[in-house]
Length: 466
Image (cartoon, rainbow, N blue to C red; front, side):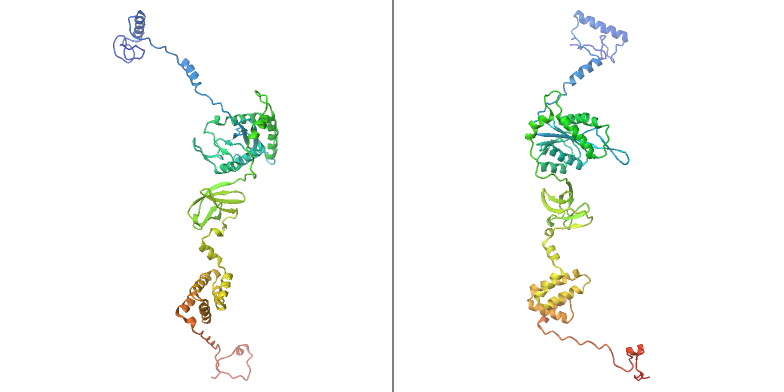
């Protein structure tokens, strides 16, 4: 069966192969096409008829009509008290510096409930993490309850690493949601229809609040928010265009009864950081060092920083809590975090060492005091005194007392001297009498006394022999 001929094909009615055009020229090509049409109409050809060809403009019309059928939207049904959609408005307002007159832009936070479209808005200095968390806290207090889920976009204060299936939430935002007993369901990246409620709410706030305040001058954030909240009450009380009710009426009947109650305490803003435990069982946080149990040396921990408290967690369990200190280079240590050996070493002070020695006897107490006094720093004598304590466990107290008395008598104020006395049994021998002090002066007629140099020597004093 022969193929139907088309312009640009590799054959023609003449039966010759070519590059798509008849070898006899363009006119011969048109005549060839005409002969093909006449033969087809006369019924002598067995080729099927070619499909109709559309122009490019008509093809684009049909393509756009077909592509329009692909973009369909899911009608979302929102249950009462279930979702709160949050976002920042694109168009915002400005504050005016009263001294310089400079205009300072501010961020406009917007939150919308899914079932009633009840809206909350406020201005903040910036869209940073403290402002983001503070706006959520004030939103919950404005609503008088907590929804079951929060629907933010991929704001840096909400999501650290966006992911379609398991986004990495910001720990501070997650901590705030846990405190209020709600959950976080971020919208997909570049999918504004996932949070269409707040997108429409932002548009309404820009039209009814931002547009109304754009020509007014505000010198403080409190003044600006007061004006925003005044218009916000009118917006929530305004009737819908297609419904015979308002946002406030729907909120009172639908969302308010379904909201979860607020917790007993307000959430306190806290930052989260990761830190490593050093060999001295301390972690460095903002230039200050806080202790953790010594078993966590060289382990990684999480640190929760609030304005007054520092909490340290290991694998989700709190292992240490300290009062926050802003002194750089300082140390905050819980004695219970030290090993037993470190606790025992630090528990020995000079006064405690002397009190222990007095329980053995006065000679032991005198030797301990002499050892501590003979060192430039008292801690240098701690080990010698602790060595005496160990000797008290090896030998009876009477022998240790006698050895210390002998050491004092011979002026051997050291741990090794006492140890040698006990090892050789010298403590059981009588203490030798102290040696007489040597005579400092020599009596001789040639030796002059101090009176000779002061001029008070008597005239009849014998002089030196020549």
